[in-house]
Image (cartoon, rainbow, N blue to C red; front, side, top):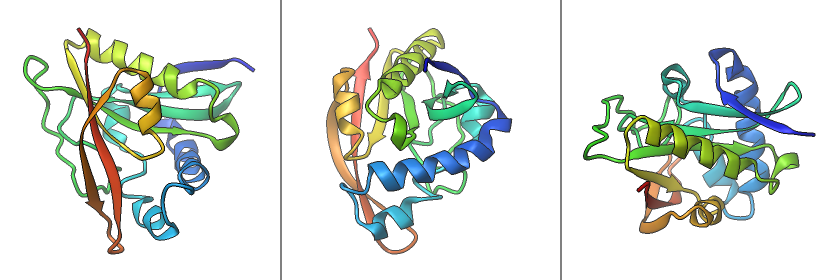
Length: 178
C-alpha cells in the first residue's frame, strides 16, 4: 500500500496518542529499559500540539491509517511532548539559529519501509522554505541511524532526566541545509 505524507491536523491527535506509545514500546525496547521507556512516554515521547498548530508536523498515511509522524519546529523546544520539561515556545531566528527536527515515530508494522526518510525529507524541505539553513535534533539511540543516513552528524551525547528518576540517553545532531 502506498504511503502519503500530509500536514498533521488537530483531529489526528487521538491516533497519534495511540501510535506513539506503540512505536516507542516496540522499536525502542532493545535500546532502552522498561523504566526509561515508561518515564519517557508522555514527556520526552508524546504529542506536541504546538507543532501541529504551527503547521510543521506531518503524518504518514496508508489508506486512512496513520502509520508514522514527525516534523520540524521553528521554536526553541528541543524535544518532548505537551507536558515535556523543556517547553520554550519562543520563535527561533532562521538567520542565526537552526530549526529543530522533532518527534518522529513509525508504527512497528511499517518500520524500515522508508517512512522515516519521507518524513525527514518533508521536514527539511519545509524548514528550508521557511528560511532555515541549519537543522538540529535530539536523536534516540534507535533513531541515530536514520538521521546519519540523511547527513546529520552527532556533536553531543547527553542524558535527559525523566519524571520517574531514570534518565534516557540522547544524541544532539545537526545538519547544514546549504
